[in-house]
Length: 300
Image 1 (tube, rainbow, N blue to C red):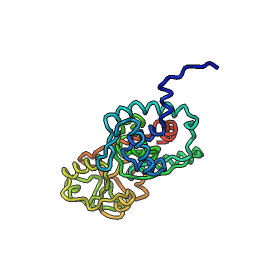
Image 2: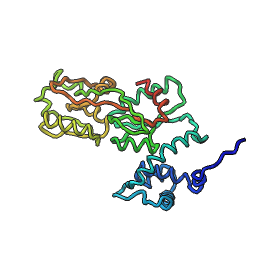
Image 3: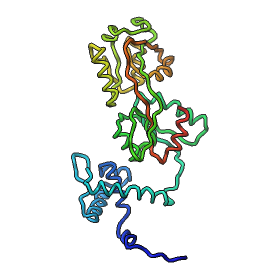
Image 4: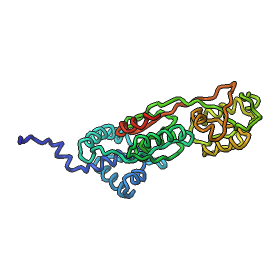
């Protein structure tokens, strides 16, 4: 065995707890000590003590508080950019990082996206006799929330209307979503088309969401073609379909959802002489889970 010289820099590393650098990167990504503590299942005081040690070691405050967020200093920005690639490479070399096939995938969607993807994904699991199970949760989503869910390992896959740009996240467009106006098959007030005049005064059920894209396009439609507020907003997509099926109200949903649930809820589609907005459906996941996600997406 040959004996190689050891650099002073390597010796100096023995004085540093590399765990502190990992915690630093997590605090940088999440901007919160409590979120890091929840992710690692340790106390917030333990995370704070680690940050205190690293501040003393680096001779820099590293973060300053702004409301509920910790904002990085200029030095912290530079440290993060240099440290993160090193930690990623190191983690790939360690035995503890050997890929272990996940037995359960956690999926997040907004309510109105759930019927677009969850039935097909469930069928994929069943027909392939896979030992993987799915845990599905719904939430109001935006780019920041999606990045947080994935980086904090709270989600493996997120389906949304947002194209997420992040160096650790893979995001791909799955499809364009065309919206249609729906009505109960028993509703005799409308023919095959809802005119602008009828749509203007119709009892319209709306999907209540914090999705900025949906809110923006809904405001444009309402401003141009509506004379009154929607008679009901609901966060439950199944409730929206049920209410339309039992009343004379109109609803606006993705065309694929209509194709799936028209018979179940006794719904029919109305043509519109005016355009309805379109959305795109995106799938976001961490890069290390990409192969499994690609296998899952073959059913969509």
